[in-house]
Image (tube, rainbow, N blue to C red):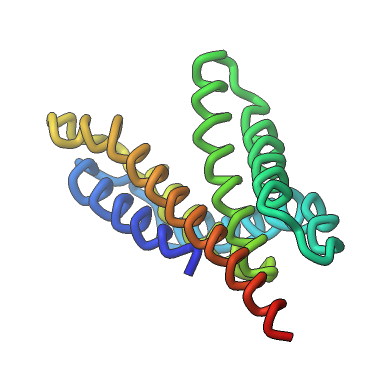
Length: 185
């Protein structure tokens, strides 16, 4: 499955929270469920409709989209997704960081959508990712160990890179499979 990298990012965030969280915000379980479930499910679904389903609709109107078309549409989706997430950034370096990290996630979601042809799959994956990523908002204090600092500063980019590579491999194989199936008819 093109989205198998989601498993890696979930493991990343579980370790991130287990190793890094010194204490959690004192709040009710209803607030946590509200923020991590209801808010994230609507956010992920709306962002996928906007940045994938509507933006990439023309891709599916082509009879046999070439690999270049697939890559172009995935990068366009990532660009729009990254730009949408820098609104409100006050610091240029943080905006640039956010643009690239969120933009790469946008490319990943787009590849999954283009590969599967089903918007529900990236919607659900976006929701799962957001739940894990936003669970960090409930950490009151972090452990500043060397391991945590390395995990926080470097491992995330490695995991996201692996996710992108896995998705591109499936995208390339998906195009080959579609071509082979068309030759058999």
